[in-house]
Image (tube, rainbow, N blue to C red; front, side):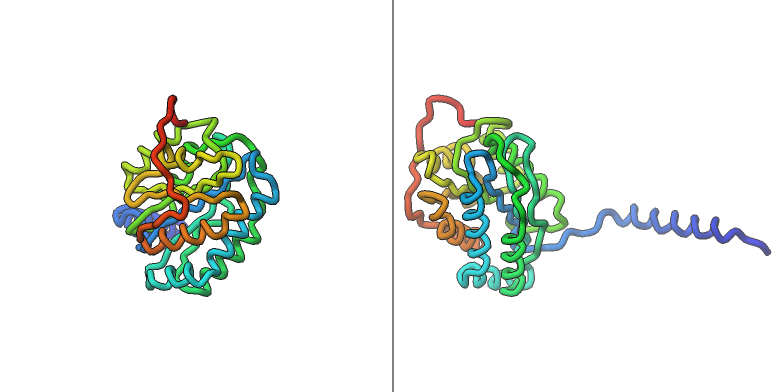
Length: 248
């Protein structure tokens, strides 16, 4: 009896595809936390200031307090990625999703941050667009976290693209927490702006840094709080502001 090998191979592939479809998509890997670090790379951030942000984040992932917080998550760990953002639609995932569950993996992630080039060179400040981009990364990363957090840092108010408050509302409805790190060198009241129109969700908070040289201490404190899921006592309290117009 003669048979066609190619036809048989095609039938087997078709059968495997059918089984795959019936089984549905692969299950996401459970983690303690999914975390997007969104770093301001707009025109108001010069080369030195951008480097201070990146070095501050890298140093934080080598700090004993952050490493201890990661260790405490156990085998589940923390899935983290780093994004650079500026104007509307100007975003780049500079460091891909990485699972951290030990000191070794945390140190390796710090090295990847230090080695990452600046992929976004200037532009306007579109906080809402950056938040929506980060939210899309959370939805498509292959992880399923008990908590999902966007950690956005910046030195200015939004002046382009989607309103930050609208993006925040969309993300909060999906169970995402948005935290902010406001760098006050150009906008002394930026912390109030972040509190009113940017941060939201379970346990959301704002930390402030006086300038980019103060960033490293603030981001370290912020990461420990986000990873442990604790509360924060702000070194520079941010009060609820009153705005005459809409917050973009």
